[in-house]
Image 1 (cartoon, helix red, strand yellow):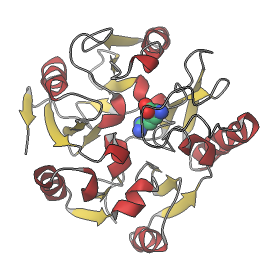
Image 2 (cartoon, helix red, strand yellow; image 1 turned 120 degrees about the vertical axis):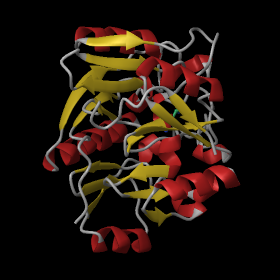
Image 3 (cartoon, helix red, strand yellow; image 1 turned 90 degrees about the vertical axis):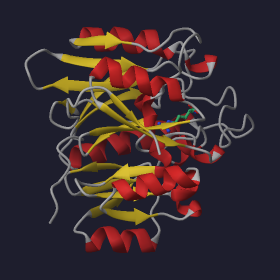
Length: 295
Ligand code: ARG
C-alpha cells in the first residue's frame, strides 16, 4: 500500500445559510435552476457527517448574506500550517469575478482570528487573480491550474511569497475551470487526472507528474468525479463511475459517494465545499526556493 496523504483531516467549511445562484460565472450555473435551501442544508450536513465518520474534523464559518458562492470554501484561500514554529499562513484568493470578491475580507477576518498570517496577490481586481481551488500541494510542489480563474502571473507571486516550486498547468476546458475539477491527489503517488481539462502540453506534463494516474474521461470530469477529498484511505466523492470505483477499490480505497446535487447547481461539489487547514509548509510543500515550472 502506498503512503497516504499527510493532510486532509481538518477542514474549513461555510454553512449554506444564503446559498443561491444569483449570476452565472461558470457553465453549470443557471438562474432558473435554484438550489433548494432545505435540501442544500441536508446535503451539507451529510458531507460534514461523512468527513467526521472518516476521521476528519470541520471548522464552520457562517455565510455572508450577499455572498451566495461563499459555500465553496475552497476558494477562500490556500492555507498552510508551518512546521518550524513560525505559525500558519494563508494566501487569500483574489477572485477573477467581482461577484465573489466580498468573500475575501470575510476569509481574512476568519484566518486572522485563527492565528494565520495573511497574504494576498493583487486586490480589488487589480493585479494577478488567484483562486485557491486551483492549487494543490503534492509531492513537494505546488501544482497550480491557471487560465479560466488563476492567472499565469500569480504563479510567480506564489513561488516568490512561499519560497516553493510552483508547477503551472494550463486549463482550457470551460467546464473544468478550477484545477480541483480535473485533478485529485489520492495518496503520495496516485491521483485522478482528467486530461480533457488541459491543453495538450499541460495534460502531458500533469500525467508525467503522477506515477500512477487514474485517468478520467471528459464525462467523468464533468460529473465532478475528481472534485473529491481523501481522508486517509477514504475517498468522499460527489459521483463515481463503476470503472473509477473498481480502480479505487483495487488500490485499497473506500469509496463514499456523498449527495451534493444542490451544490452542483453552482458548479461545485465536495472539494469546492471543503478547504484543508492541515497542509504543511516544509512537509507537504518543500522549501526548495522560488521556481515556476511550466510545460
Ligand atoms: N460558483 C462558484 C464559482 O464559479 C463555484 C466554485 C467551485 N469551486 C471550486 N473549488 N471548484 O466560482
